[in-house]
Image (cartoon, rainbow, N blue to C red):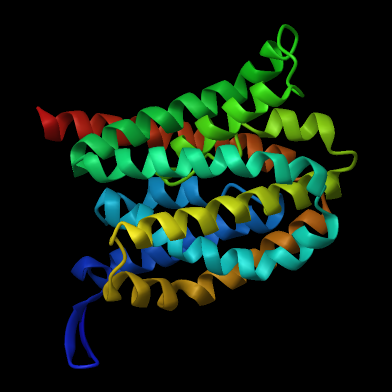
Length: 267
């Protein structure tokens, strides 16, 4: 779809057709439904779904912009319920990881990015499924400053490359130090907000944001806010543990399919 804005011809959503565009809108509703329920986790399913119709770089940058909008809607809840004594010390490591991850993101070509992204997603989800960090917590003090700095750097680096997964490596630590489910969710929102704001600054300074991306993000905002609203209602009404477990299985399958496609394109 081509439009004229301020005298410039802009190709929206990389020129995909109506059916593919409807799929992108659904992916954003689903992803932000998840973020509304959990306080994090929207980017990964969105990127895995939309890279089937958009280029990997475009898909990741687009979700970066829309994640900012979601934080505007969620941040009041995060400010009220987050444990800032937990969230604040993680900020430095997150900023370092953003710089490292963004440099790698720029360096990778489309096929290589898809392959790396798929592998990272599979690793993140499998590590979460087998409780890797919880197992490590029996031999490593997860509350130690050095450990948490490393986790923050690794999480933000992976999130900057793959477009999602930042919280997955921190959630074991957050579960241990946040006193209530509401505090955990609020701290998730706060840490996610720190990441997406830092990521936005990094990709803007790198010159990766253009007018087409900005317009694409604006057009997706209704799906973003409606998904957040629906997800928040679910969080208040019931425990979404089974939904989350099923989602992990689906994301692993989607990531494996992405890896297979990337390998086939490289061969």
